[in-house]
Structures are given as structure tokens and as C-alpha cells.
Amino acid sequence: MEILYWVLGGAAGLLLLFSLVGGYLLYHFAIRRSDRGTNDAWNNDLWRSENLTDEEYARMQAGKELLQKRLAEYVTITSRDGKKLWARYYENPAARAVVLMVHGYRSSSIQDFSAAVIPFWEMGYSLFMIDQRSMGRSEGKALCFGIKERYDVIDWANYLKNRFPEMPVVADGVSMGAATVMYACGVGWPDNVKAVIADCGYTTAGAICRKCMKQWYHVPAFPVYYGAKLWVRILAGINLDAVSARECLEKLKDPSLYPKPLPILLAHGREDKFVPYSMSEENMKAFGENDTFAEFFTSETAEHGLAFLRDYPGYMEAVFRLFDKAGLPHDRVEIPEFVPETPPEELTRPEMPGMPDNDVLMIY
Image 1: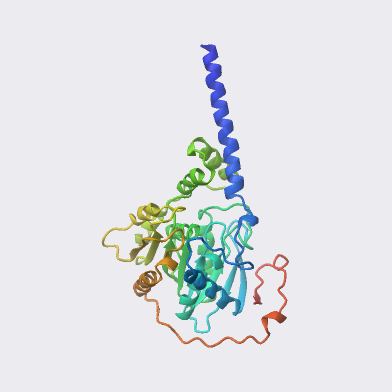
Image 2: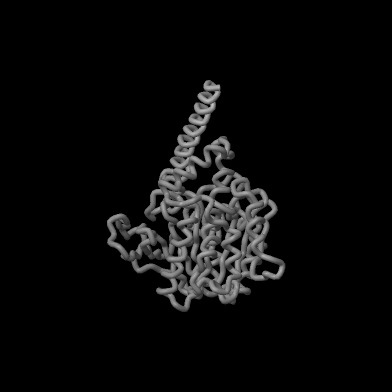
């Protein structure tokens, strides 16, 4: 009997060790900041999925090229936990609204939104393209899957409200950015945010982590996930299972947060192998048949984050319906041609890290 106890105790110890070591490795490789793993598409080529057509990739390239010809303003704010966060602001000469663009996991706004640049620009929308915490120029040591980032995007929206009091804002997120804007719905957007777009967002951080553990690292959720969850709690200060997109979306009907429901569009491709399509189906359960302020757009053939490219006409029609609900314009406007006083090749890009707090740069 005593031998059995020793065997069981040893097995439990090995299980615990496996959980803690495996969990830390998962934190190290998947959650800890890694600029080497971030797609720096601002300075390099846009990443091209093997499933993209030449026409789809050309649309992405055209959006990036438009921005490369425009003047960008670099803006910083300080997060609620003391991190300096960065954003690029492209002011439309015909500005009548701003799109707050929230990119996904280890990505960038130019990568995730390049294809959307021209449609929004031609509607007279300025572009506010943030670097999520722990990515790009923004500070941070760990990706928090939208749990801390939800407060960051609300603070960005408040920045826009203070700077442009009469300018409506559309919060648009892709992948982890979609989860971020959905989670922010549960906290309460400021009243300048008139509409939300959430493209291929997941349900909870824990659910997507468990799914990716099997898909990427071929390890079982039990016991490694629970070790990772402990390390994330200690090192990043978040509970991966604490926030549910569905519960946050239900808050859109809470009159104490929103005097009237905030219009929202969820979108997802059925061929998404990263964030399962079923997760958006689950998130849509926050709404009933009478909740006409919410719509779910499905692309039958799109992979992760590609619904906008794969079904562009249908997606844009869904965006127009969203804007109609929000009272936002979506007709094309005449935009004056931009001619810089100084040619871009004659400008010197200053070093970003040495800038004083709250400084603003105008660069190309």
C-alpha cells in the first residue's frame, strides 16, 4: 500500500512539473512579447497568405501605397497601467468620421487593414491606426488577448473624443482586435463611438489558447493549459477565462451603459482554421431576433481575416447597413489631392524611443 502511495505521489508530481514547465514554455513562446514574431508590415512587405488571389493582394498593396503618400501623425497616450501606447493618425482632408483600427495577434494595423484603407478613405473617414500593447512601438511585455487591451481602446476613443468632440468614431477590430472591441463593449464605449465592427473574433482568451495549444504545439489542454494560465496570471496579471465576448456584447442592451443599443457588425469566414467560425456564432447568441442593431456577415469561402477581401461587395453592403443604423455617411466624397511641401525623400525620420511623453510627430 505504501508503494502505491509513492507511485501516485510521484505521478502527481510529474504531472504538476509537466504542467508548470509546459505552461511556462507556452507563455514564453505564445504570450510573451516577441518583436521578432510581429509582422512589421509598415517597413517590410505585406504578408501574403497562400490563398490570396493577385487581385486581393493588389487591393492590400494599393491601400498601403495610399498611406505612404500621406502625412502621418504619431500620437501617444499612457495606458491605465503606465504603458506608452502609440498610434498613427491619417487625417482625411474631407474628414467626417474616424475609424479606430484595432489589429490582431502579432500583427499590425497596416497588415490587417490595408485592404480597407481606400474604401474608408473615399468615404471621407480619417484613419486612426493603433499599435496594440506589446506590439509595434507600444510598450508592454505580454499580449493580453483583449483583456487589458479593451481599456486601451476605450482610452484611445476618449482621446479622439477630447481632440475631435464632434467627430463620430467607428471601432473596427480584426481577430484579437475583434475580441478587444467586443470586450470593450462590456466596459462601455464613450458616446463618440457610433458603430463597432468585429471581424473573426474569438469567444474567450482561454478558449482560443486551448484550441491553439492543440493546433500549434500538439499538446493537450490538460494539464498544460492550467500551468500556462497560472504563469499568465503571475507574469501578465490576467485571468484568461475572466472575460467572455458574448457576455460583453449583451451589455450593448444595458441602458446604464448605452441609452440606445450600439450598432455592431460581426463578420467571419467559414473556412477560418485559426479562430473557428463557431466562435462568432456563439458570440451572436448575445442577440435575439429583435436586436436589429446587430448583424452577422458570413463569407462562405474566406479563411482567417480574409472575409473583407474574399467577399468585398457583400461585406461593404453590410458595412453600409451598419452605418445607416448608426446615422453615419457612406457615400463617396471628393478628396483634394495631397501635395507635401517637402518631398518625402528629403525628410529624416526621427528616432521614436527618445521622444518626450505626449509629443506628436508629423512624418511621412
